[in-house]
Amino acid sequence: MQFLLAFVVAAPLLGAVAALLPAPPGLKGKNPDQAVLRHGVTVTGVVLAAALVLVAGFDHDHPSTMQATTDIRWIPALDVRIHLGTDGISLPLLVLTALLTFLCALYSYFKLPAGPSAKGFVALVLVLESGTLATFAVLDLMLFFLAFEMVLIPMYFLIARWGGEGRQPAAWKFVLYTLLGSVVMLLGLLLIGLKSGTFDMVALATDNGRGLTTSVQVIAVLAIGVGLAVKTPMWPLRSWLPDAHTAAPTVGSVLLAGVLLKMGTYGFVRILLPVAPDGMRTFAPYLAAFAVVGIVYGSLACLALARPGAKGDLKRLIAYSSVGHMGFVLLGIATMTPTGVNGALFANIAHGLITGLLFFLVGAVKDRYGTADLDTLSGATGAALYGRAPRLGGLLAFAAVASLGLPGLAGFWGEMLTLFGAFDPAEGLSRPAFLTFMSIGAFGTLLTAAYLLIVVRRVCMGDPRATPGDKAEGLSTGHGTGGLPQPVADVRGYEFAAWTPLAALTVLAGLWPAVLLGLTDPAVQKLLAGGKS
Image (cartoon, rainbow, N blue to C red):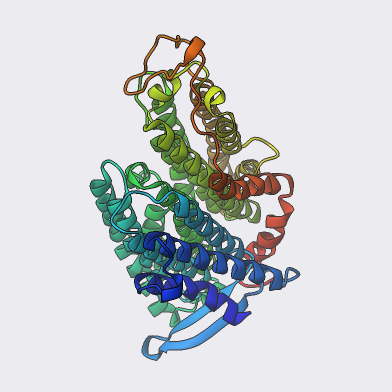
């Protein structure tokens, strides 16, 4: 098992190197681009299969125990080790990363975004996967920082070279924001390591902050929290996100929302909660306050984009929705309770599945219509997607109602548990303050439902005021003979293959939440108890 986890982390990196090399004579095929894209599908498929074998071999009776561990001395002078392992907290994120990357590679095999070369694209996606998997698998603070930073360069180039309009400024904003946050985070990690005498995350979690003074913990939480909050992204450090999502290619948006945003919240749970509990307790009310402001802000921004005449971009709207959804994750973490943290981890996975599906669908809509402008899409025909591409419209409506937290789908449980956690926060936190945060968060769920239902009505059903003679700006109504809406291509075979697993898992997690909570709860209980089961 220990070799299997190391293979899961290292295989994409080796695959990236192989993608840049000339293809062997028997594997070149007729089209070099298709050959390297096939290589990407193969490598990510093997990594996903290995991750599923890791799940099958995982001791589900002891999910709080670190399993499949590797511990090798690397830099003895600093006691930095190549330390890998997984438990019930990180295992779902490893599988989510492997799944989304494989689906993106499969989608790109048939729909490669316009850009310089297929080789570079595949290599960057594989490096991105390796860095993300490493972030969730490493158990050393310095290794965590290196893995955390490893994803920046591939995502920068994916946006800057394969993105759409405004890609260069968006890519630079993404890198500058995250790098500045990372510099501060590195100082906090070094402070913890030098003051405690070790960078080992398991030993630090077991110590539970007893080797660190309260002032050191407060400084460390502030420094590390800033870097993690930028990546999450937490309001008000979120201004890079809408531009990056809007400019990124479809698979870039899927990976950015589906896995990269989870790296920040994972750091809060894996490092700050167990290593610096006194510092977290000091900042928890402020973290919760920023979280609920993000929930409301994200929803209001989406409502502004969704209103008729606003010329709102559907892709940008989904990006702003992530600010609100990740606000629920941060609120759950800020409660410092098993209920709230479990809700945060569940919401992480649900957001990866649902928002990944939404970005796939929005990308498909943009490919078909040539635009993601809401006014154009809703004014194109009175029937809109339901009349033109009913399966595509149905899937978009399904993803939207899952995102708003409909009971029975994955989005419901994370939000509900985080609000329950805020109802009764950890000892030492102000209950009246968290009841206020809970009320604001609950109000945010109503705003979320409002803007997503407006999107469904406008994009799927169309603008009821449109007439057969109307023309939306930049797009013909497409009415054919007899005034009937002219159909566009519905869900294609490769799209069905890439999207079905996300839809199915959204339903499964909604109907059977114990599958995920059974993994996370024992690990969270142990983490919050200072390494004691």
